[in-house]
Image (cartoon, rainbow, N blue to C red):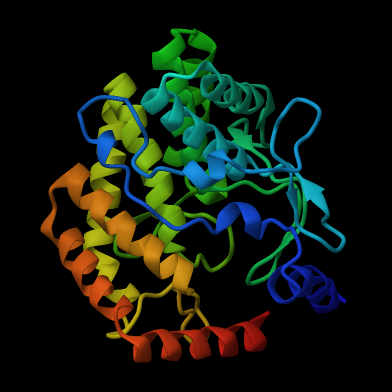
Length: 323
């Protein structure tokens, strides 16, 4: 039954190309070169296509994503944060208030919808079930939404000076410091590596793009507050990436995650391109050479038609086997 629900969602989106959540997610990943001036300013990726999302929206102008099937139209806190970030970037570049207004609407939604979980930590819930390794039952939360929500809120706070945005960012940040078993989104493995988990699953799968985007939220929070806990988490997570990036490299492509299944979970073309951009940004933010190394290596893989075809086939087989 779960598999049939999954097919009812993906066939309209992937095969029939109907308007769906994919219209929001899969823009071409792009570094924002204007974001590395120091301090809190524009975000590290442009998100311009996401800023121009054509809907649907709710009555307050907040994006809704159409997941098709039983899930249907939903607020997704990650999408709302990215929509706000993209519009904030456009506001900084074009100085048009309409863009700031959209960013503020997204920030206000985040401010109003940070809810305490049963452990008393502030999280942005996803109020729909989602198929991953197993079904994530609503309400579920994610390091990715925590990090990207923070990235929008700190920018809006700096722009407006309104303390409620900083307070919400501070409340959301706490979940990034707390292990999963205690209600947070942090996993510490047997080698003392610290991972920020996009999906809370057992065993954890260490989704690469979600970890990195969440980590940029840690960096942004440190820029705002100079808190030692944020600086320490940033350094520890960078160390985790340095120590484990080779596990995401299969000598012709990158992996989406480190799922504990027999077949490796190859990144789609979109996520491989995203990984390349994320390596670029990490290198610019940290100066650590291994990120530049993998940025270059994964660009070489991308330029091979054979590698693309091989990755596409592997991803298709993985989807058929595990979803």
